[in-house]
Image 1 (cartoon, rainbow, N blue to C red):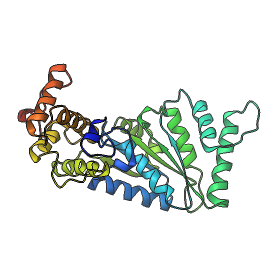
Image 2 (image 1 turned 90 degrees about the vertical axis):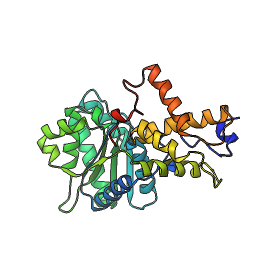
Image 3 (image 1 turned 180 degrees about the vertical axis):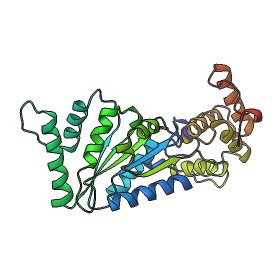
Image 4 (image 1 turned 45 degrees about the vertical axis):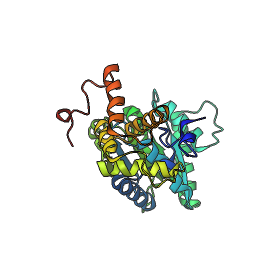
Length: 289
């Protein structure tokens, strides 16, 4: 039997898979999603969401897709790994992703670009659809592929862009954008995902437990444990979920009723001994609140 069944849960509450059902929306995440939806509805063109590893960019992207599914007039496409070796491979993948039937044998770069322009004009002008391209891990894109995005953003009417591009990226993308002035000028929205504060960490833990079917009025995680989780994970949702998952397994194996700060300290110390941390993150001298 899975550990979460022992605790009366219907599902695993702290999976690190990008399931929008378990996406806790902090104030920052809500603001980013609201701004994205505004810019998409206004067809502003290029939006960039930056964040360190584990801040929830991929799950936010899945949540955005879920929101788009509930609205008429949106067509969305998702690219998970944009590490294309050159612009031709990128253009070929865009043709496949958009489902464009390109009957020209031995197509050239010009043929790809022409086909994409026709597709975007048909969807955006003739069918009144909003085409959204979401690219995760956008920091992997080289300059030639980013240049293709700049080209796509040139396709527009007098009133709006024919394609809406959302880049979900680690902060390493920014220096490249700064150097590409013609692309940087097309960024309509730039958002940064921030780590959670301690209160939001508590809310995230409670939210995920409720989503997994936890109904008890008693807390599984004491406040002292939440404090240590926040200090160790530094507010990063992925690290928080991983630590909470291990804490629940420990709770079951030790046949305890609640998770205390001692439980969290024990898990973190295990990681320190294993070399996962250069310094103990629970030592106050090494942590800035």
